[in-house]
Image (tube, rainbow, N blue to C red):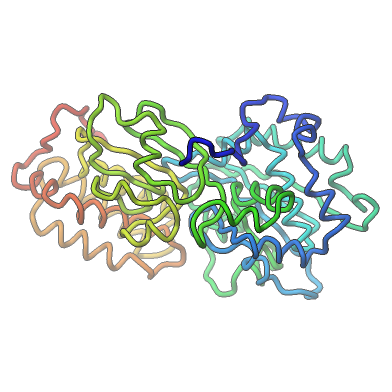
Length: 431
């Protein structure tokens, strides 16, 4: 049923001319911006986005229009918009595709969101490693300014907007919205306590909205084709196109666009199936921070609500497919090591918890584990969730819980056999 799907976000991704504003305009670019500034009020734009049911594509899936409506009016303070392009979730590379293949689509989305919010200064916070993408965005912003799509008194309508690109320094924690704002302000990237929430007290103490790259890229299409059209794509409350990042033991890894709700099994087939025709052992469906799915769940629809029902999350849609050669203890250990390294250290549960998860998993993987270690791990995970300033602690705990829940026998085999049974795999003694 997905063979005839008309791509939306990546329709022109293979056209190099799309990086130039003339090429983008030829394919219908900036038509939505012209439409709303001449025909729609900011409130009407917000209502259209609400009606579309667009949910944030950064991981949480919160309704975008509703998020905008939290911004207070008439405070006398400027309103800021931050585009979160700090794509750092392992297994995720969708935002990079939009930035590098169709950057003006993102810029137009930012302009639309800024208009709806009555924002005059927007920022693109981009991961420092995305050097090419940052350069390209700077060029495209200059092109848009030269065409008078940005600047002061745009189209003579009294609307002003400037967009600035800010390169981060490669910290995973700066993908969290309050840590992102701290970094933008020139401080150490550490999350803030909430409340107050960014919508009321955000960047520089002013009302602020943070939206993901993929979220913003949807906006020109919603305005051009209407919210009613948008709700025809995907299942109820999970509308619109979605970029899925397929990696792991696949023949054709890459970024694939399909409607929200496509079955996971079909996505795996589209990505060429598992290498060597081997069976699927497990799948991480939404980036490294979400619980793994066992093979029995690979018919699950890939949308926010369906994945919650089977005990996981869509997250960033970073799909990592693992075959039978994968050691799940090693996967849990490497995942824990990442979060231990990336914890900002503010909260005891996260600072100490991530370190202990890694230490215990390292011990089990290297044949020195004890059976009580499994209960200790699960207890630590339970005490790490919902008790910290941000959700990095939860992001470390949930994958470990998932690996133990679905592959406990494999953990026990490591402990009783006092070695990793996957001896054909390269040694990770230094990890």
